[in-house]
Image 1 (cartoon, rainbow, N blue to C red):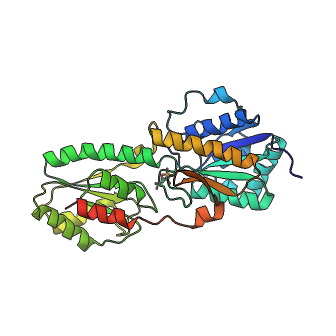
Image 2 (image 1 turned 180 degrees about the vertical axis):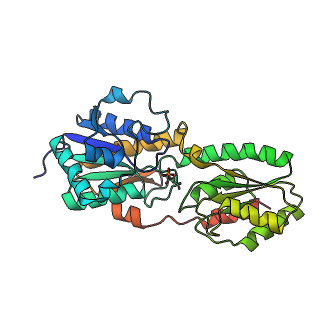
Image 3 (image 1 turned 180 degrees about the horizontal axis):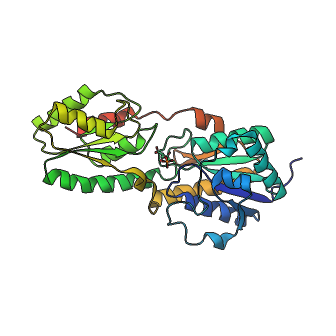
Length: 328
Ligand code: F6P
């Protein structure tokens, strides 16, 4: 028979995302609700290896639902990729009487967790926390909605100056391997063109589209470029290419960078994180392990961790069409 779970540990790992604190808060309070001790692990897997633990009660997580970042800090641990590192982590968990783990993060976090679970048969569940929204098995990841709102707010501001000076702006947004931020913020901010890693639209198509916009009477334009864009050029190279071949355009570049990862989470992300945090604790107490908790069609869903890691969310073709039609 399985031993009862008396202590659950929670950690955040990989790139931080607004709403991670709301998820930590929900995990801690769900543990309190179900009379289980909750232990916070600092700096992700590195803290697991170093035994950087603190018992958290419901009051420790007061006034954090509105805060960006993660109170538990985050790290990308190289040591956890080694057998020795994972052995130290297991020893620490056992010594502290921790019976299960909640992992808040993205692909890399789940890959490490899965390996650990396979090696030590240690119960764990994942919660998707990344601004990229590139995790299979949930409609939204924690932080994505906030990042979109941040990006749209900034592009609106850039549009003001672009329009005053009749300029063409190339704006780079995050999303190393996924174009969800670019596509959705691009539509939301009314971009003339959107370049994403999933589709190679090609330079000719970009030039064609810019020239058409100009012919249609547009005096300024916004091109949103995902950092992992398939054309394979950085925003600066793209800008240089257009400047050299089409000197008629007055071009500026903006790289939004890590500001997209910060800020107070949107209400959507707070609710999402709260639901996922509670469901994660409930799943562990029900003896579920090796899954990621998501929300699909507004219902709590569970997907095997290896599927969440290996499978991709497809770019919605309808959105591509909407982007094309509305940018005329
Ligand atoms: O995965 C989240 C993300 O913000 C990506 O969009 C981005 O490419 C990457 O993390 C940046 O990572 P770092 O903070 O290590 O520079």
